[in-house]
Image 1 (cartoon, rainbow, N blue to C red):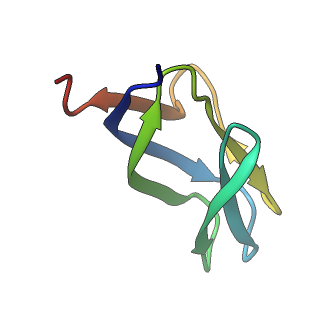
Image 2 (cartoon, rainbow, N blue to C red; image 1 turned 180 degrees about the vertical axis):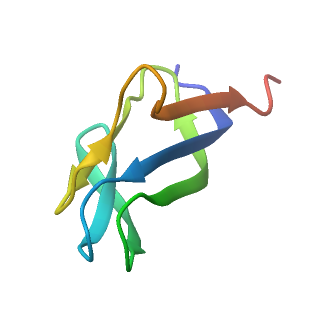
Length: 88
């Protein structure tokens, strides 16, 4: 049977576009559950957020970047990671 657990997710990147509104959709099992916005005013603005989500065994969380470009290289990385909060 599915088991619900709580995760904390964190994301951090820089946006390369100048003056664009950047948003990231969060999907759980292909359902759009929330949208996170960053209205930057200049290039190289940091976009970061934390999420707390309850997920069941087998659930998949995905991010989709919209309306902007993120910077990724060997010295400017995009970070996305999650931690299990409870395991009981």
